[in-house]
Length: 167
Image (cartoon, rainbow, N blue to C red; front, side, top):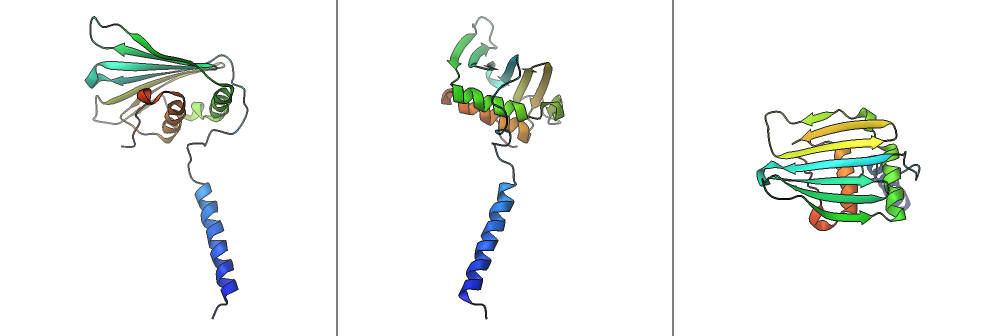
């Protein structure tokens, strides 16, 4: 029969290993370590389109600011800047740490779910230092893109949150 001390020590060891294994899993903070300075120039633009509602939102993230443009797909309606904001120093550092570790070179230029022509359409355009890349995401879930959308959603007002759902 095991003594109470052995049971307690075994339980503590078990908890430690569970926490260790859990900490090795994915997290939305995967790209949050590293340098606080962005490569210059820096700009990330997201075209988030909903063709069923005939509009797009265009998010432009720069090193120190974020802009959101509402672009109507209806003839005769004008486009409107719906949000402009300066980023705090802490937000700028968060963005720098994220993008300095973001695996942009490893991502494909397209992630498209076969047999689905409309629905969730996103186009990301990156300009980071000398790197320029476009990534088209069509009804497809990718963890790295989800992490990026999560970062953007931390910066935008609630009414402009970006939908990106695992499907």
